[in-house]
Image 1 (tube, helix red, strand yellow):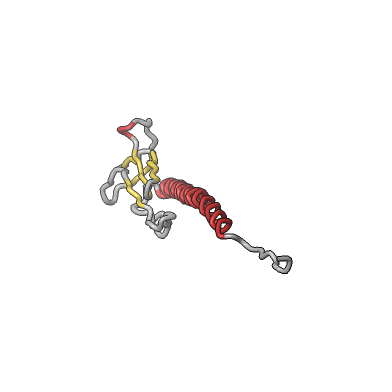
Image 2 (spheres, one colour; image 1 turned 30 degrees about the vertical axis):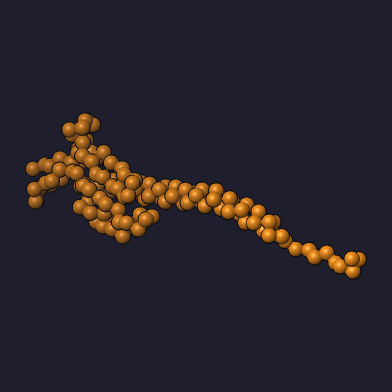
Amino acid sequence: MAGRQRQRGVTLVELVVALFVAAALAAIAIPSYRSYLQRVDVNTAIADISRICLGLEKFRLSEGRLPDSLAEAGFGSLRDPWGNAYEYLNFSPAFPAGAARTATSYPSTPSSTSTAEVRTGSARRLLPLDKVATTS
């Protein structure tokens, strides 16, 4: 028996234990990473919506009215992190053709405030805006 050498290697039990540990780590790490990616997407959408809000306000200040679409304000090709187009709903009062538009500030009451809504997926923001009045 002195002539027999002992073979070194990994036993089946050791291999199974190593695979079990790797699977347990993956079971913890993968959901955490997915949750992180989801938070990044939501934060990106919120930042995009904030940028759209600022762009809409700049458009309103320079043109005296809200744009009819996001494309008119320069955001037509912008997509959310999930690949959907942002939606823009203009709730400002309609004006007759040819009427001059001026921006007038009124007290902020629910009945005298115009709003524009920008939304995507689950992220949504309502923008209270000054009421736009028609002058003759």
